[in-house]
Image 1 (tube, one colour):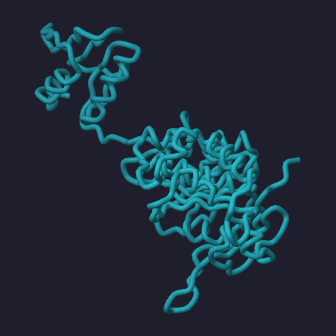
Image 2: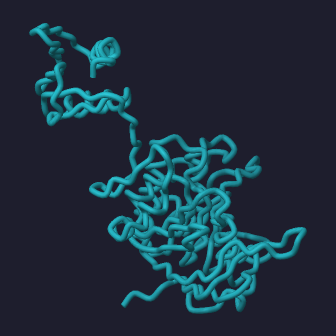
Image 3: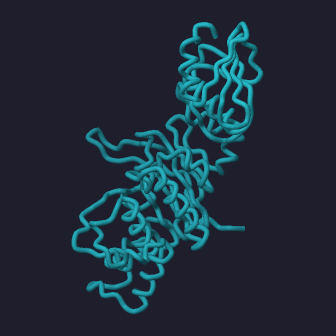
Length: 338
């Protein structure tokens, strides 16, 4: 049976404040495994950053045990911890004067001694890390000229060059546009498979985590932490209860969240395929529930292909239009009749 890389028992986390120690969460018991991408999800202020800093050894735990690679975290010196655990933060830092190759090479610091001189073997590992992340073509670029997505890849390559069994990341998709967010999450999942490493990250990108993560940690002040695959957490209603907000509902069939529209009218919509779905989506956004099953005096026939769309009114009146925008204009004129 696969043994956990990180084993946590009855963990309590918190931080010092003016009024003493502030306890953020307690009773945390869970495992994190190699070869998996695990995502930590939770609302702002729930303690995600505190948990990540505690697992990273940046701040002490209040109670309980954290075993990393079979050894309690308190037994590690900072130097030894750097050989089993690497951390990628969102802090952009000052990267002036460093090439990409130099920056990735800093990942070898736990092994290079006081002077930090890279051996031939170290350089090979730096090159392998850049190749795994797909940034070899950036090797001679200055790090301060990189885009946010490129910079994040470089920092991941630096963590890979550190050759630790565990990589912890704090909001790795922050500051990225949506395609780059998807690419970053897919890269991390692929790296977990290819290297067998334990990759654990905090994120606010709920939808991406639901689609790409192998395991989720749902962190909630009232319910503590629930751990499982996205599908198991969907089936046992943990996800449904985890994120409850007006206007957002959990779709049990897809295992994803979607916007809930407040509809003030309804209309029969005839058709099928992609056009039907796009028209229905647009009408829902405008407060009209449009479905085949609806019975109404007005109805819309969108057929199977784009245009013309037939807008039927009582008395046999039919208008032909060719865009969804025109359908919406018609709906707004007749909406009080729906």
